Amino acid sequence: MNIDSFNRKLNKKLNREFNGKFKAELKDKIIRVTGKSDDWNEIIKACQMCVYRKDGIHVVNDIEFTGDVIPEMKKPAVEDKSLDGEKCDVLIIGGGISGTSIARELSKWNLKIFLVEKEVDVALGASGRNDGEVHPGVDLHKGYLKTKYIRKGNHKYDQISKELGVPFRRIGQYVGFTKGYLRPLVWLYAMYKKYIVGIEDTEIVGKDVIEKKEPALNKDFKFALSNPSTGVVCPYGLTIAYAENAVENGAKVFLSTYVKDINVENKIIKSVETNRGTIYPKIVINAAGVFAEEIAKMAEDRFYSIHPRRGTDIILDKKTGLRFDTVSTVKEIELKNKSHSKGGGLIKTAHDNVLVGPDAVETYKKEDYQTTPESMDTLYNKQQITMPSLSRSEAITYFTGVRAPNFEEDFVIEKGRNTKNLIHCAAIQSPGLTTAPAVALDIEKMTIELLKESGEVIEKNENYNPVRKHQIPQMSELPAEEREKYIKENPDYGIIICRCEQVSKGEILDALNAPISVPTVDGIKKRVRPGMGRCQGGFCMPTVTKIISDYLNEPMMNVRKSGADSVLVYGETKGGEINEN
Image 1 (tube, one colour):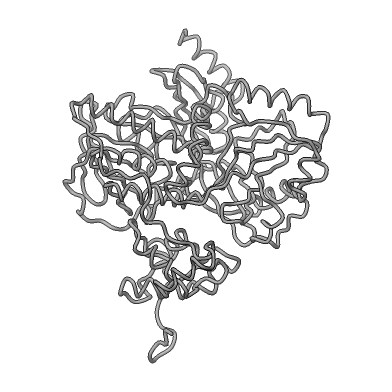
Image 2: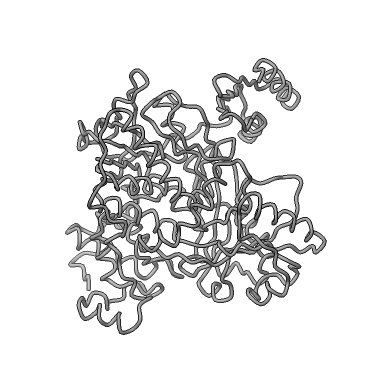
């Protein structure tokens, strides 16, 4: 490649579109884009125009955004020295699905593994704010890292879910088309995906098959693109399970712990400063999600940029799930307004609700969890075409997550380019949940290679057990005889706290005694589901709060919903003794 010629052509394209506002320069496999703009979408467009998907070249956004102040990362208030001076073999930054799955795979080895997460729990970022679909990969393109890992990851889910004890079902996917004349074109697409890209279960099914299997779907669907290998899993449940199994095998997870700075000398990370003190790792793995670019910069290895993308999902009542049991969406051939969303649709979740979404909205706020009326309308308007009986009255809650794409719209999974003892697991967006089991194995391999290259003698962990020991029995799913056995052994299993989800006191206490105990209302909610039903905790939250209070031997005023600022109880409203029965 003639770099001077490349730069001239690139800047000519930018000048034609933006009249000299932005400049780009390719150097050392980085296309650095500079300039100023008060329009975030304009900045995104300029950087996307500079993408060159060859030779490991990445776009780095150095355009100054003048339209607003970009919020700083939210940080835990705690400051102590509990980790000061600690040494470890591997320090993983980030407690999402990437970080926790890597920690679990590395726990196969006799290594001192630390994982730090800035939030009060794992899976509070994108890993706990997604639809839980285990994708087939039919919409991915050959040559992408996403495509390399998608089938490997998909195929591992039967084993992984069994070992970790998380609900997983293969419910299949239908992408429906209302225009019959598109069938030959879509058939060609399906055959290309099946035989060239390697998505082996791709097929076309007709109207009769759709109506027989999913009668609630649009009667105007003439045919559908089908992938039976599509599955659903509880995304935060899986992340928690990975983390707990890692801890059971010797890893250590430190919550409310964030990275302040990284000390690099002669292209080697010497230490990592956190709010809990300075840690001295041999290897650092950057799995920091939307903040991966900041970690890369601290580590003097920034060669990609993350641009946050917000996505909203709506959760419907379980009664909707009684008439729908798959993943489905409507699709038309669009030549303009290409979206980088994985499509959005209707998904029967692992817990039998139906989820609608997500959409895709660019944002400069990396923790932008707002839900807007525009997003809700977009989701309903599209998916009522997929299932005409879809009703807004069936919604019980909604949530928004923030994806972490780079401008190449592909994963960054590689050793540091400038910093030698660093590994990036970055730009992980959908289908990152699906690919995590396979990606973690490659990161494990890279880590062991780096340690051995530095002269370390690495031995297997002879006590490694891939089966999570702490699996909480779900009373509502057990046969009557087995449930009675549990209750006989422990009467707390017979005390129902959450009527919507039929969660017992025994399950809540099991969650409080887990390898990673998070004694908050949301921490318990994510582990055993009190408050996940139709009333969203309206009845059970006070009782759950009291159980946590008793467990901690602390006043109810000290129990939090989630983080330190999420106060539930400020004080007594009446004088005299409190009747807590």
